[in-house]
Length: 70
Image (cartoon, rainbow, N blue to C red):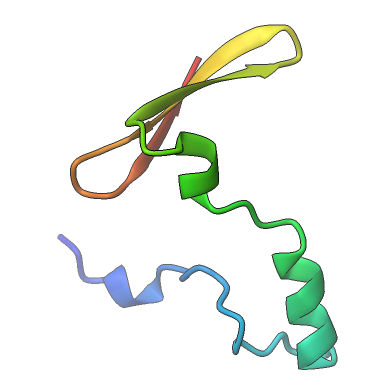
């Protein structure tokens, strides 16, 4: 059932190289747009996000996953 688990992408880490680009500048550009989930949740399990006039709910699960619902 989970035979291809190793093929799943992993989050970008500060020491990951980006093929075809200077690794330090590519990582800096990628990380400049990253917001840590703890900054959004601020110790709560859920946070409401207003986007284009609609409210979405971001929820952290017990297993550490994130769920975004409308």
